[in-house]
Length: 459
Image (cartoon, rainbow, N blue to C red; front, side, top):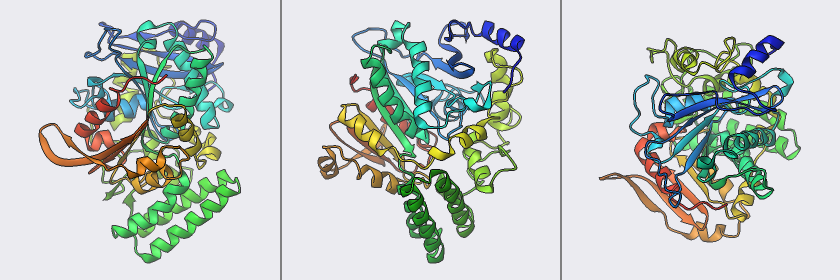
């Protein structure tokens, strides 16, 4: 997005630019919300929104956690999707959400990587091209927000990620550790929480055919086609042909959709287009590959146009009343308009696994929590279990031996899931949920995040 000097001067005044840093640009009257832009690199502007929990404990001997929510994609908007559709204080009708995670922690939403949501770059070559680059930008953001804020830097930070955000989260966790140890960042890292996360693409694509065949969405012909394309992806990954593997991933999704009559990749009990959480009214780029357009439903807007009061679902809400409330969003910036640019820039990293980074976090003593929805396809539970079993962490064999404990919600004795832990590795199996666990099973998700963030911080 090219901007004139005059536009940039005005923007800088709005967000209080100072030597490459930014200050909070806006807040509500009681200070419970504050938001702004951070210039994480020259001409690369990341939008953030912090909600202070009304349940926050100010006693320094009882640290109150902060959750940094990282959306997937890459290119989806945490400020929009995670906030208004999943865990924030208000839903897309701007009504209070009973299951908001503010009951357990402060919430910090970001539009990351730059180009997602309200974040933007002034020149197209400034989009990040790897998970490491995305994590570096986020580390810069945290330095700007936490270093001079004693309330924040005394509170344990939990990096919570969904979908592709998990790959960036583990890189960010390691980057935070390095920055804290070098004195560049004042922050207590409480843990990294990976929700239905795209940690090992190879393990996931191999899980799709058998899973969908077992539940009768694919016949044996469809299973063979799926497995054949998964084998091609494996070879491409082994040869370092990651961009080509992404193209084959698109072909695999298309093949599965054709042979399953359009199973929803985010909930295998549904068809694509019937789940209001994964449906959009528009596609990001009508000239791109059909499967990438389908995937961009997640990148841009996960709700249907029937969610009126915002004229066009989440996209209408974010470009309408929310943009007006925030006051600092550049007038010519449309929320979500650059999502496909972010994905395209990171295409060569999309199929690269980050299992080794999870191993490194565990070895450094950081709490790692994994949760997965039973009905998810794209980041299936069986695929997650497969990559977990590839960990080289010294505690893995003991972890595998431990019996799971059932999860319940409030006074109801219906089994909502299972969990088990060994040392600093924790796993939650969430029954009845697809890819978007806080949406599908809000009560047990809230209980899980409360239990997870009660742990003392590790760093």
